[in-house]
Length: 195
Image 1 (cartoon, rainbow, N blue to C red):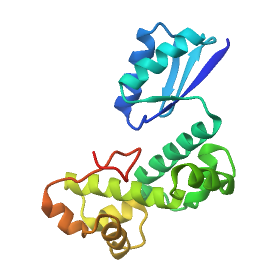
Image 2: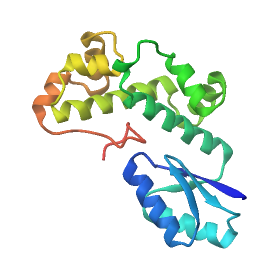
Image 3: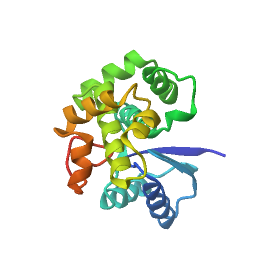
Image 4: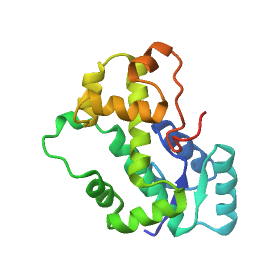
């Protein structure tokens, strides 16, 4: 059976998957699968149906991607988010971050890096650090792990390393952030912009 893949920007969490699935099902599309950034529907999608999809997605804060480069950048973002949130404490052997991202997206890293930088005005490495710091903020906010456990879980070589990156990005130490009680978190798909 023929299927159509739709690429959607700003899908960053399980709730996003649920909302997109519900939206497209209400439009009468036969949704086969929904993962972050991508939906597979049965059969071709007419131009009229595509216009409705765009409208519904925009109303919920998403964006239908039709440009090949934009689709690739969105895949990179999802690979980076997945990598930043991975619990690395369970794995004794790690791929390099660049290898992991290239494998996830299915394209060589050099090409991905050049494309991402040209469109997002930030390197993949910088975006990954921003994502890791946002995830560290989340873990600090929950208060269930010590900073040492967070550093280990996120694959940092030491508490000093995560603390230095955290301070460079946020302007405060992890301890000061935790004491604030105010999360100062950013949207996960665009960590440079406050909520």
